[in-house]
Length: 169
Image (cartoon, rainbow, N blue to C red; front, side, top):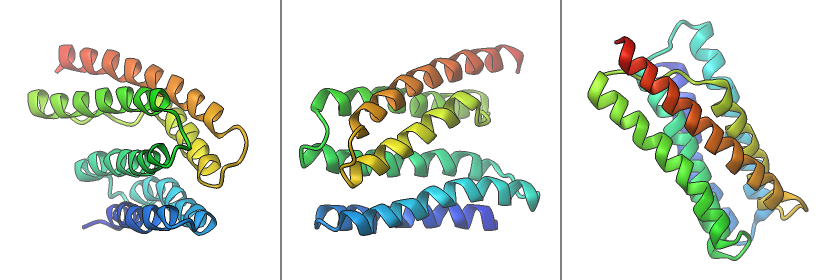
């Protein structure tokens, strides 16, 4: 397994302690560990490209781990009442659409769509919103709404690109 994929897996492994710390009221400890997870999201892609280790596994694993991280934390924040039901539901819709689209593209065309700028922007906004929400800084929910809007735009972009990819392969 490549170094980059191991870095991505470390982010996935961090989900359990982050959620545990958050659930047990240790919000700042959860925030710091979440910061580590965010840093690994920045590092894994650079490592993969620098070491010439870009793999299909990594292209699938990275966004899957990101979605697991977002959804796990936001689910807990929803359960404890830090985010409204509609906000949580709106966040899930484009995440599910992108995930389903990726699976369909992989199954039907044996293709993996490359990361794109709208998706990266949506991820950055989601990470920022979650960081604010973990420690209850003002503006966290508003930042989450921005992340949701960006995620809908990214889902649309991925759908358009997926359709074009289907036509050209």
